[in-house]
Length: 96
Image (cartoon, rainbow, N blue to C red; front, side, top):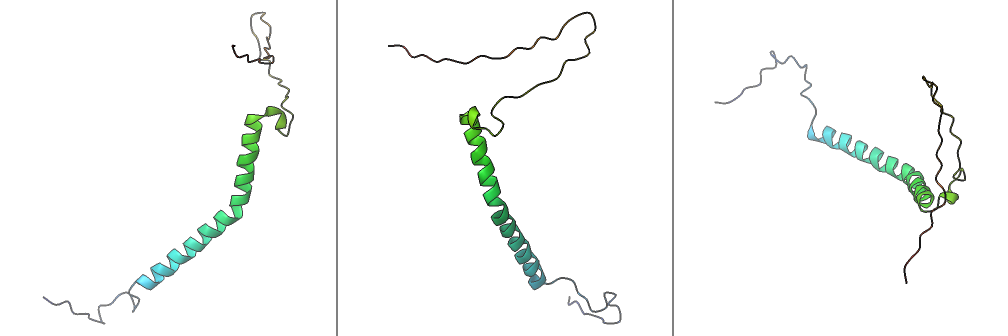
């Protein structure tokens, strides 16, 4: 059975939908935007990861110097106080 195109019944007004060429152009534009975004952000992301790795390896290398101040203190109910615990320096020794 053959399908016959009847122009009097064509409700699309001659527009038959997107072709493969239109889809290829859309994919190309998306690829260009993706590559451009990666190129723009790659330097910043790499620098941030390097800085974070250096900060983890040597906390004194961090921008803030490794010290902070914590406020906190909750609304205590029954006469209890707030206890702050700070870690001291860690020393590692190896055996003979």
